[in-house]
Amino acid sequence: MNKKIISCCVACALSAWATGTMASGFQLMEQNASGLGNAYAGQAAAAENSSTIFFNPAGMTRLPGIQGSLSVSAIRPSVEFSDSGASRGPTGLPEPAGGLNGGNAGGWDYLPTGYLSIQLFPSIWAGVGLSSPFGLRTEYDTNFIGRFQSQKTEITTYDINPSVAWKINDIFSVGAGFSYQHANLKLDRSVFVGVETGSSTDISDNKFGWNIGATISPSANTQIGLSYRSAISHNLNGTTSVVGLFATQSQLGVRLPDTASIALAQTINAQWQLLADFTYTRWSSIKTATLVLANGVPVVPFNLQFDDTWRVGVGTNYKWNQDFTLKLGVAYDKSPVTDQFRTTFLPDNDRTWLAIGGKYAINRQATVDFGYAHLWVKSSSINQLMGVGVPPFQGNVIGNYDNHVDILAAQINYAF
Image 1: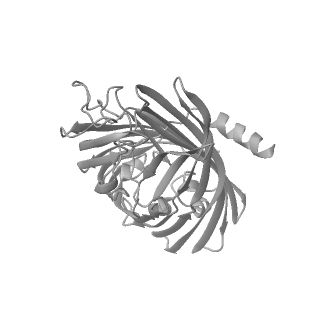
Image 2: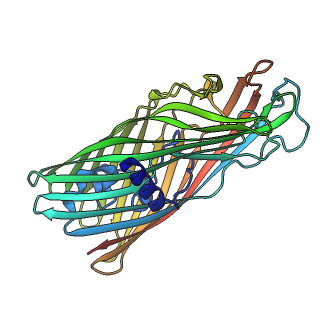
Image 3: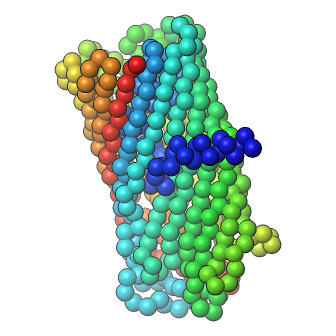
């Protein structure tokens, strides 16, 4: 009963959450707007506002009193497939001509986040964050050559993250939290059962995870952050239906990866600050995943074979005047997807970030952050041969992807 109550509360609080976008793999960096202008460089050390709860809970010890942050990111991935002329439908025969590339499988999504930190005692803080650590959506036109592999895919996570922090002394602080995470997978695709029809899967699960962090301040101008978020193993359960044939229970097990980060925030002088970080994500926790029906029959095998990844970012803040700070940043984000195992629902590849943003002080209590980033995604090939001549008749997709991402975000911070 308690789990059901918590799940309902989380679902209500996060009902506006986007179903996900396109980041490295399907991890979402867009957990605030204040870091976007720096391409999220140094977020485990920056601790500008209460969104530090996600990136490093120990950063709360730099936030006096009660502070809250609300942000929304508008994210538009562009995902365009070009058929090489070798793609085939489930029977191994060419599909009808026209519209086979599937249009742009991306589109606008909106990701809100919220955080609140409270200084309980001189050296103790508590806080809570609402975020979405992982997400993905790709949706092709109905006549896409690869519709037997995927036509519309949505991966969504909702995460509520209570946290505490302890300021040991002026140099060291530590923090920790736990996450209650709801995960959902929706997959619509065509299937061939003598004739073409539609299949739909909707499965979800709720699990707990945890995160820890530390900050080291060897001087007033230097902040070093260390953070770790645990992996979370989900056993997604729900229904799979085939139009005109059946609807049955189905399940899929997946272990969402853990992440570790080391970051630096270095004040150079009264105007300039340097930010940098290195983040490692253990995507190799996902190698294969299979959707299994209630009768034990596997129907959709995902042979992903993800590799571990890393991300490096560098940013700078320039204090233009007393009220306005300019933010700049670049980053390189390695993808867990390799050419051999690229899929239609996650045609991912390495990407480079270039970002600009700013922070404006409305008054002594309120500030506004805003930012824009463009992500150049490396062009990629796909050669997926799945079930031609044998069930589940998913055909093969051979071609190339040309992708990029644009992100706009805004955030308001208030110190009570």
